[in-house]
Length: 154
Image (tube, rainbow, N blue to C red):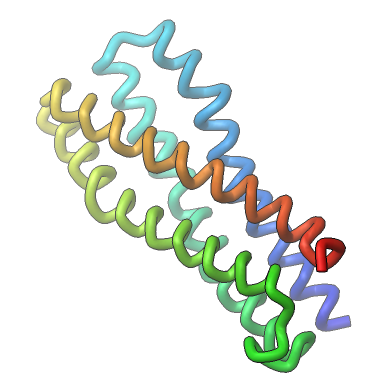
């Protein structure tokens, strides 16, 4: 029963994080860029990130806790875990580091730029965030494929 709960929480966390990035990158971003002027668009993104990023923090905590719980309770530790688990772990850590950078560097500067109505700086920070979230979206989709099919590749 506990294994099922941990797996469900793990999957739900990944779906929320990766799905949110996919939606933001593939749907919200192009529409916002095509119909909103820079000041409104930058304010929108600060608002969107302020609602989404707390969920990402929760997802990261749950992904780490449930992932390592499963590694040690299902596979008996990293030494006996299959290779796809190691790939998922490494990719997940890279994604988390990218998020930490986004949160503590360009997002912080984006919020400051919007507060100061410094639209050129805000635009450059948003472009930086967009590139990093694009990378994380690709990594998240890849790790999702590995999670779903990794055990069948061995």
